[in-house]
Amino acid sequence: MTLLERDPKAPQAWQGDLPVTSRYTFGLAGERFFRAIKDEGRILGAYCPNCDHTYVPAALFCERCLAELDEWVDVGVIGEVHTFTLLYEGYDGSPLEAPELVAFIRIGDGGLLHRLGEVRPEDVEIGMQVEAVFKPQDQRQGSILDILYFCPLSGS
Amino acid sequence: MTANNQNLPGTPLSEKDFEEGNILFNYDDLRGDFAWDTGVAIGSYLQGFKDGVILGARCSTCRKIVVPPRTVCEWCFHPMDEYVPLQNTGTVNTFSLCYVTWDVQRITEPEIPAVIEIDGASSLHGIMHLLSEVDPQKVHIGMRVQAVWKPVDERQGAVTDILYFKPIEEV
Image (cartoon, rainbow over all chains, first blue to last red):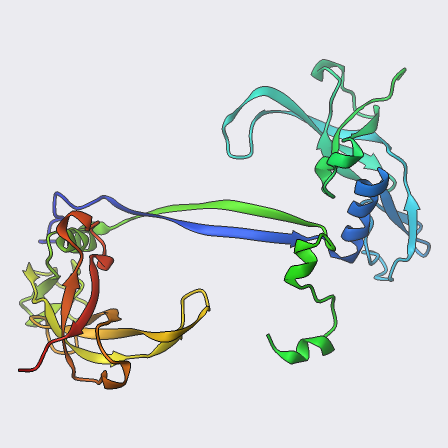
């Protein structure tokens, strides 16, 4: 119960916007991982001999035994579709012009979350071998998007 | 930045490292749009600024007039009785000479945020605002000040429709 009333001319809401900008650096291991993608078109992992485990993307420390990792390995550009989904909405909830295939691609003992390309949704299978398709080198920026998508291995 | 950070663990980065491409990074520019419901009393308060009025509210039980207005008295929890248009003038309750801006840039001419008890409200009831048109060294607690408003057509229904408070010339 209140006796006071809102001024009928009063605005319903106060509106504003905050300038929120950020710079995310990838850390020591991330820097080297993305440099390899940018400069050499290679995907790097880090091997823990103690746990016999290959981290992809490469990590600085083993999550299992906490050892510092210094065995960097080229894990190739081919992986296996571990799981996938067909997205109809963008990250802000707006409908996409065309649905997009997104998959977790197992590489080594880890893997990457990325798009699938050059394949129809009905032809995607779990366990399917896929290969990274990189941007031309002069367009790479040191980002996971330097890989355009993963596409099925020809002949598979 | 403290000079000690050379001795701390980690990998220090400078602006140059970003500019010259020594370090990879991901830049993001998020949309921080927001809106909050102004509510009954604050909505009316903001609209008051558009009309060139500082609005308060009165509790007849406590015989208090508060600013900004509230719908419920914070002492007796009774609903407030009425809005009260207050004066354009007030008294400096406290102030600060501020040599850094809100985003931590150094400035040579200080900003002077102050709490100003508004005439017409109960004693010790006031709002935070800025002082200007005054020699920073001459600002003092108890100084009499008056609001300087934006031109009517530029007002937005915001506390910044008052540009600042300036001293009342003592005749």
